[in-house]
Length: 622
Figure 1 (cartoon, helix red, strand yellow):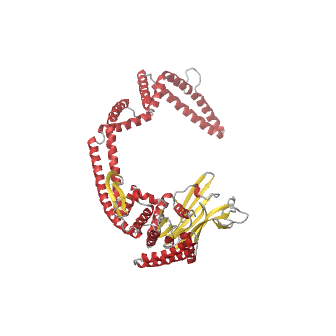
Figure 2: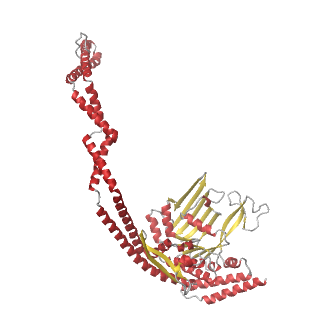
Figure 3: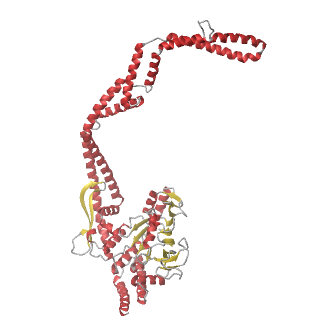
């Protein structure tokens, strides 16, 4: 149940705090007074779509906050989402909207915790259901009628529809696979020829190591310079170990130096580290000379091997020009071997795909048939229930039928749904959207909501001018139906009907005021729209702003005044008497409904008509 709503800087509202009660909460006021803005603010608080125009002109931030008292199921769901409740069973939903420097941002919080749009949408579905202005036009849309029928059918029907959706997806996938298979046969053969050639070419290349080409380049360089390497290795050997030209080699010089240092170390031990370094150097030079001599002796010219290396390098370069670097060529070879195997296997045969396609569509038709049966059963129940809800709404002779006709299978089944009705005896059944008047549409929508009231989990139902296009006895019937809904739901209702407003448990008057803006739109005294401002201000002054105000009519006198305004546009004595009669009748109706006893509409209508006639006669004389 909605406990309170706080609004700051939203549309024409500068600051509002509204406390709601159980039962029927009614908003009244002149057309354009801002009643629907309050419902828009609640919708936005729970994640509804908004834009920067939602922020009050002259400000950069709007704040919306709604506090709900939760039932056990919603509280349990929030606990599963790891959201801690306030005071055990309260949820505070808030939304901050900012627009500055060209940026527009919105943040939603639940009990102070930032939450995403998806969670807010899920919570909204559990807390409220908003029936907005113009929704009666949607009653004629077949897609929406199907959604309502399925919702009324309950979880078993909805599960069947999910099975149809799954079967439809499987059937579509089977059809797509078969189509691809038929279209790709020629491409498959062409691809097969190409891959067979490439596999043969790469297989004959015997690719194994990505570094092979680099290694061969090094080997080719060595083989091409064998003579130079032999000559230079001999020169190095002479320089290090043994020189045939009569000059001393490095090893000879180091040996003589080692001998001299041995003699010197006898007299001065400090030379011992130098002696060790020279000894180590002599050992390394000796070993280097031995190894370079062995290297030079092993070098042999091999023209045949050089030719083999050069031929392999040419082969690898040809492969790389076609398939990229050697590492990529090796990876490509491995991949096309797998693809070639799959192409040779041919995947599933054409016959197998055709059989799978037939089986998938047979399954879809079976699921659609089961769904159709459930829809027909739900349609019979809805027809009986809806007619029962419409009759008290001054549609005693109404006929209603849910027409279910076959159509091509879709994810939603193989049924075309149409709501057909006849409001007058002797008239044929026709589609609802084609013949229903505005008042009939309003009553139909209200009756539909009443049908869903026992299965709808939303605790708060919101109606924005559900009584548009009706008057008199029909308006009274709508008022009674709204009051009946309060036995299961909290109701918020915007209305222009005094008969509906009289039934309210909490009655709010909405009006616009002109204020002298002190800079933030909140400073200064105001008058109701059309009233007088200070002598220094005019309605066209840039310092004058329009704001929406909401007043709780918490006593009978205020309510009589407002009902008289709704009925006549002014508070004449007869209008006041008429309003008093409405309040009296409303009290009787509430008491009667609470006792579940029949209502004497005839006597109530006579009383109301007598007051209305007296007021009309008074106006004519004047």
